[in-house]
Length: 284
Image (cartoon, rainbow, N blue to C red):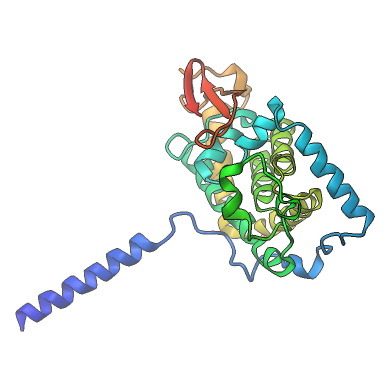
């Protein structure tokens, strides 16, 4: 009898442990059903005989012409979707290193926001089921190692774009003083998908509309507003309420680390970009 009770207790404890470990430390702020349904209000992807589609094609052709330029290498580098990787890129215009350890409140905010934005385009992607540019033209892309994985997925709207533009909107609210630089990267993040050949321009434009809808809804969430308040307070504490980011030395604020970006040729094992702090390479 005692043995059975011990076994039962152990099973119960293991169940609790498994349940706890299975919980997402950064859950989305809303479920898919709670988010704006783009199927009901987004314009349908341009018909292939429309003037809008002609513009999509010209943008695709434009993208191909600059893939071998420094901007094209940046477009290749922007293929990342993991929160730590995106945080590194956006640390540059944000003016502060965004990491789970150094800026836990800001990191938590974006770690929950990014997948929330991305979740909103799942339904329209499945319903519209649009072919990606490189699939329609049967041509190579600027990111060859990802072609097979993405080949059968919907092109409209762009999941990468809504991650980047949504993240930019969130970070602008945390640090409005740097909004222009942050928005510039957010915009370029979407255009990078056109350059790489993974999305039509109309896919990217639709995602920016979706991001606006999700961003508005986020402000009705008590959890989001609480996380935003904590992130803004953390930012003020680390950067100083009066001084600008550039005036604060790493010695005074360890989390305030300036990053620089330089392009390098991309391969199947490198992203095509280097982020460094001084002579120390942070991301390659």
